[in-house]
Length: 159
Image 1 (cartoon, rainbow, N blue to C red):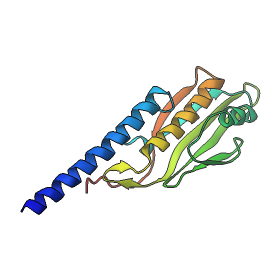
Image 2 (image 1 turned 180 degrees about the horizontal axis):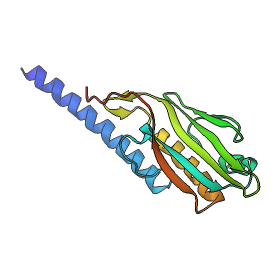
Image 3 (image 1 turned 90 degrees about the vertical axis):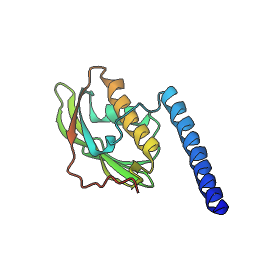
Image 4 (image 1 turned 120 degrees about the horizontal axis):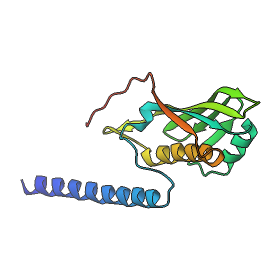
């Protein structure tokens, strides 16, 4: 009986330790502006950006000036892919008017892992999304952002 209580207390203590460490890291990233507070299931929705970007090359330059917690490949003329260890996302050009410099892009997560109802790398995913948003806002402070539902099959379980 005493051993069981000791094991439970140790497990709770370890959980509190790692939870506090994660909360401290999240708070620091929020304070630094590297990410923003988001809905718990933010990766299950995409974002459509409508912005006066100038040219796709201008958007590429803006993206290259941002920090990303993952690898980045592709072209802003078609699709940019972002790949982390447990997630992947893409930024797709859906329309571009060269005369006005207005582009329409869709950002969406294409793959992510969950554990205990949370994204395994939620901070990195949030930082990625924030960096993409800031790249558009850098080019056009009046960027329009419209969320859209993704056709994903997800399971939200606690255990």
